[in-house]
Length: 262
Length: 180
Image (cartoon, rainbow over all chains, first blue to last red; front, side):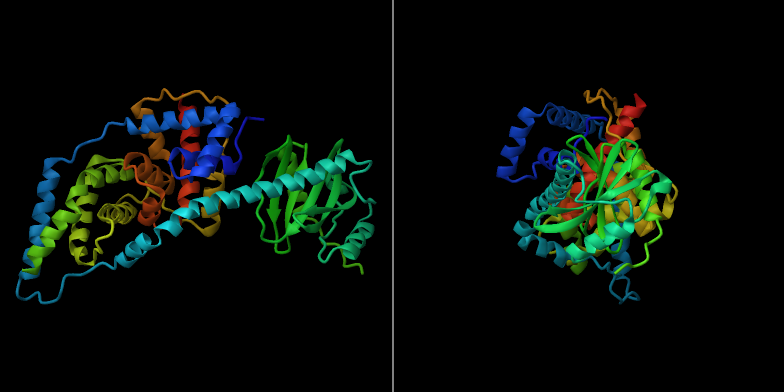
């Protein structure tokens, strides 16, 4: 794997370079940079990119442009002053109230940098919790609470324990064998996790409430891949390479929905 | 008489930012002669709209006009060169915002060495960036505007400015690494 930063680290690094973080975040980020050589190296690279861009040669305004603008505005004025032209010159609908409002709301708007950072931090935290569930599963005697390769057993088991439970497709034909299911607690919510096996690799597929967002990334050495449908946000965690997780997503997405079993 | 006032208002509000306006237009258009046409058109728009100027931030106001003029001028005169977000479908926009150039995920180069790129490399890489990434980078690095003003000028939320800057820089790094 290439050493890479999480999305939220990329954003924070950019915002730090641009002087857009608040004081507390600046000192926290600088502390992290002292301890994290990769982060520091990425900072140095961004700053050298900045220097390279700022060192680009800049052309001065040609004096002919000054003259052209002057002449064009003079023509515009004559046009307006001509007696036949009693109609006011066409105006563009610039919304300058928006600018005025932004001055008033300045404090609120600049805080949205921090709000955005928080949102990304929460997404990362979510991924971290899902991965923690996967790790706990691997450390336990079995990575599941209900062992069954029969989806007609796993689905009712979820239904009995959770307000909403996902479809449990049988993906054996695509190389992903159903091992069973468990209930993970993400935040304060119990959620269904379906466990599959692909060769020697365990895949935990955690189903979060729809509309949540989890970035695809690597957490603690495990690959995380997330996608959504109308009912759930799915988060697959495994030590499988990203390409295999992508194949898993495709297999899951195209699986026939199981007939409803009460 | 009013026209006289408008002209002096224009001289006070827009004219001081003419060098910046020209620089912005040049990097957005990737051409000095196109930049002249864009700035002239923007100056005319500013002059016509000067009465609407609310005396808040003359610099952001002026550069917003230049940016908007550049978008419409380039869309009209250089349609093949510049693709703007608005021309893309919602799905394509999402893909570009989230996954970078041409739908591929951004591969962060392993080598985190510093750049020794020369001006031609940087210019080439900037020209290759999709317009919505290029404009935030130019506004930030060349015009040195803050996020709030960039959000104002490009008419997107600050969060979008942040993510475009971050993505845009990653894309630039990737493009420059490839040129080596």
